Length: 252
Image 1 (spheres, one colour):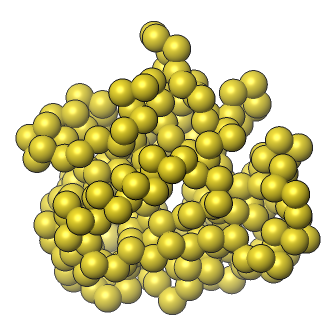
Image 2 (tube, rainbow, N blue to C red; image 1 turned 90 degrees about the vertical axis):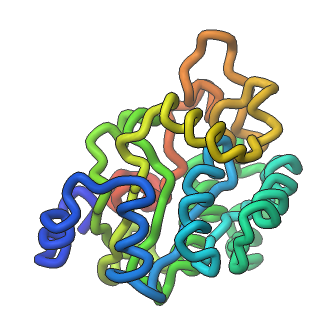
């Protein structure tokens, strides 16, 4: 099972009933009605995170926000998280990080990002997120179709296999995934940010257009595309938390 093949009667029903909804309108029905008390936001507190988080806070600021603290983030990202929490009034930000036993077994020296970035993402992002989402029926992401080739066909409402936290590639059920900004582009994001006077990630003005972990994120040269600063020189443009279970590597 993976996000490309999982299709249940409920998914078909949700897509039929809410076809055409996006942004805050889609979030409203999902947070307040369809998955009330069983939904969480997944946020990197990166370059565009303020838009989604502001929408969620306007609906229900107590909605859990899962923040993947990989141990390799920019200090600016951590400070930006704190600033947004204060500005938006978010009351339940949950930091999820790699388990010490996983790091000891797979990345004892902290250099796995250089030798095998897919494995590093699996230990520091994929496994911690699956543990953090246990018990939730749905997650909310800030993904957009324009970001990567893997996201160009993304639907605002998806259903994905729930990853097991044991053997890579294992699945234990399904969970819904909501992408309310799927059809948004850079212009819409900029307009929303300006209209609501949202603070911007401090690294954006320095040329970081997509911001992840410090060792694997670089400035984008003038005229470069959105993801050119991520995993430079690698055949990689996704960390793995949004990819199907069967895409190779360590289940990522």
